[in-house]
Image 1: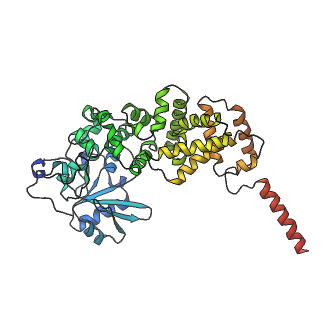
Image 2: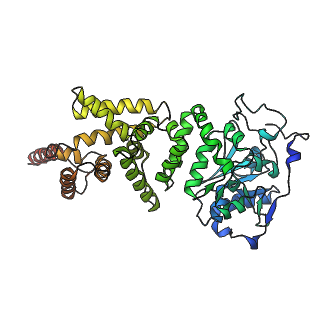
Image 3: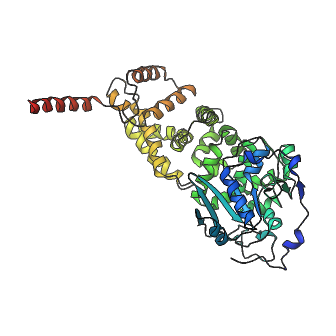
Length: 440
């Protein structure tokens, strides 16, 4: 790691921040995690600067309970580790400290400076993307590397004030999303910022500032260069935040969705008001409702829903070539998944779940045949919910839904491993008879 150069242009960018005293803002220590406070106070007592930063400060000011708490300090990673026995250093490009308290992790970073305002271009590739970001700085350096003004607010544990260098508080009050620095350059440095802009605008009901909005379409193609694993992580953040359907609309509006789900985007584009659009609308609105009610959403189910449009078309193609419904569904699933993972990597456990849900759609057509075995399938509940979404989207499913609803009432353990099929029950009976014979 290298120290900030004294002759860097950064020093010429330093400006006096707006400091909002404790009695002029709503942030209280009661709204901050006890563990985050422990970290802040231990750094402070060790004579280091320590601030709560980013999403937690933003969320509290918006009246939202934060999920994560991030801390920034002038202490170097090794110095942080000396203060906390429960500290683990992670990262290659820039080392971060994870302070673990049971299931809660407080992420602590050292002040950094930004290459886009320093003397050299060593931290960028020729296309402008950041490849290195490991220069230490101070708070008035660190603020400029952050993406949006609303994420660049610092809560000072020393006097409980909020420090605002870039007008983030005014933007929150105005319901506005604005980038720090030149938006085109910031998008080129890290194209994922375009996805973050959509996420924040949708999640917090903010209007994008024209300077942040205008460069997105012309730079959307830059997402092709982002590692597929990183895009997968962004997909979860985009669609599991309680505003999935609104997010979909905005992603398509700015030509970003095609780089996440190209096959689905093609189907939606070919028929904007068709079945595929109705299905994904119902699926994402259902997802939003579950999130708002505090229920879990399995990424495998989300994947199955988003890809159902192209899967359905592919099943018809394989069926027309003489394949059975189940075989056509399996082949379609393999084809669509293999194409999808070239855009975004997806853990196997979720692709397996999506395949199971799709194949069960074909098996659920076989009413009164091996119904107990289907009910015992661990994915039955998910497949049944998927069937309901298909009906809500216009498919004629009344008979199937009525049948499987009644079958579930007979078997309260449907979809659980506890449930026994007829074969299991017969085996159990034979075992019991044999046991009684031996006892005699």
